Length: 234
Image (tube, rainbow, N blue to C red; front, side, top):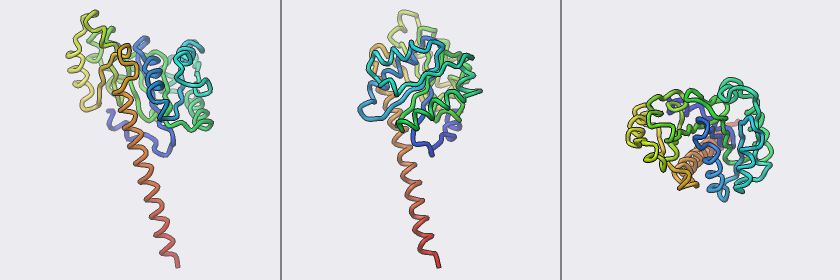
């Protein structure tokens, strides 16, 4: 479950890594562009993209002025998207580590290629997972669940502005998401209407604040232990 998986986050890494997965067309790249636009003034950011097309998503981010080119890495895995984020993550890990070594970003977003509901990120690759669904795919999608939906730390249901047009019942989606995810958060959003994704930005800010507090507490404990050790030396 998400709460248990979240405990495996690596607090020793300076950068918070957030994986963003979801089906083709659900809005993953749009979400990344919105987060980068909203957060770039307060955070150092970098992005790893997984896509068979080496340029499409990169060009989209560059056109929006979200990031400089050296803050975007593209992984062309030549395999199923879920394999590259879960089974053999070496290419993504190498790209992430190269960006972290060069830039030391506060936040690194890793976007999976378009996946099915069974796709999940290896917790050795990322600290937190976001899974994006599309209202236009039907209001039955959360009910179908799958590890992508149930294991994500945050589920994002995008394109709520289309609900009426596609006869999707958002209340049904809320009920089914809660039934599948328990206490784990779900955010309903229209990135077309709110491209800055304020609720998701706030979720990331909270994660970073908690991470910094943990790091500060660990550092303080280390200093206290070191001082005590020195005092106790003969």
